[in-house]
Image (cartoon, rainbow, N blue to C red; front, side):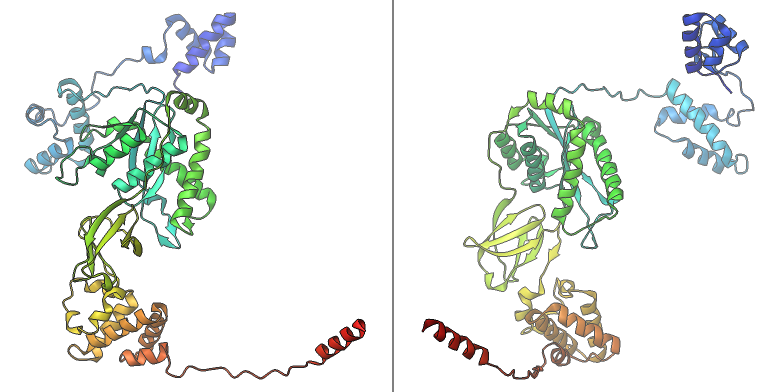
Amino acid sequence: MRTTDAQVRKLMEEMAKHGRLGLASARAGMDRKTARKYVKEGKFPSELKQERTWRTREDPFEEQWDSLAERLKEAPELEAKTLFEELCAREPGRYKPGQLRTLQRRVRQWRAQQGPEKQVFFAQEHRPGEAMQTDFTWAKELEVTVGGEPFAHLLCHPVLPYSNWEWATVCHSESMAAIKRGVQAAVFRLGKVPRYHQTDNSTSATHDLRNGKRGFNAEYLALMKHLGMEPRTIEVGKKEQNGDVEALNGALKRRLLQHLLMRGSRDFESAAAYESWVQSVLEKANRLRGAKVEEELAAMRPLSVQRLVEYSELEVVVTAWSTIRVQHNTYSVPSRLVGQRVRVRVYDDRLEVLHAGKPQLVVDRLVGRNGHRINYRHIIWSLVQKPGAFAQYRYREDLFPSLVFRQAYDELQRVHEGRAADVEYLRILHLSASTLESQVEQVLTRLLAEGGLRGAEQVKALVAPARPEVPELAQPEVDLSSYDALLVAQREVAS
């Protein structure tokens, strides 16, 4: 067993106390002769260790090294594996796969001694209450479900770097609405604001939606002005400048994963219930940072403004296709709104459509660009009158509410010729919009299993029978003798 620096340090401490070598060596856990050597040398094992300068075997790359070094000078980013593959192709059979590590060591040594200068990172000293850093992080690895369905989401994660106080809100994209909600949730939780708010360059806060250029957009600047913080960002491609929140992103998800394991289930009844659970976990973590958080709060300015609404508004005109276009995505709306100007409130997770100030529709917001969400109930009344439009309808796939409806359409195509299948399917879809989709789906499932699906009238007969069964109820016999006796008793009392 090799003697460690810690053992020698213990040996020296014991010798300084009593000067007895035998007792000191025993307490340090080493042989007496070894102890005598270190007492005599007065150095630690790490100081006595000499670097080996000789090779134990012949270097297989000695002949080629000069040319390899020249290649590295020309392109320092070349990897040892790439150079090794080139050598193997140039001289087949000469090199073995196990020799790659030898070449990797030589390349690593060359980089250290003759390679280009590397970027140096400088440790930063954070001052209490100076800044808040906010970042977004995907939480896919948590494997959370809502109502049994996978819940794809991000966490908007504001952090105070000095104390590591943190908060989080659930969101679906790095949108301005998500930033507004996340940052406000954090500062209103604290009741105070720092001087600066820092983000990276990947969010819509630093993306001018009008021309696509980087730079703080007007809505983000308005948010910062309202809260009383100065916006600042990191340099493009310099994630390390947001290092504290980047590191805490991983720590946050590890903490949540541990609490999910303790909880025994990753399923939540709603997104709101999940977010509430996340914040309860962070409350416990923040209590452990109490002393430094108090320093932060003492240096921060009190929050003295009202909370801003967490949505943006825009006005759009409903097209002849009964759709609206909102932030590069298409949504259907009730056809009665065609040609009307509507106001849309854009939240992080949903859109609210209003006409003349009255709510008309709430729909889940799409993430990304050029997506579409078409509700067949909005257009089916027109489509059954123009069934020929179904075949080449741009958003036709949205008109299959579930796999069962798609299977039903495929079966109708097998049974009917030409456009007859389209007509029958649209009538079934019309029935679904007029009654209950779940009932129609149950009937379709049964007919498909029995192999007997033929058309809409067949489905209608099972979903809404023409003569519903009315149960026969026996006419009860009413006995009023007890009431007569009560009246007689009241008369006797009165007399």
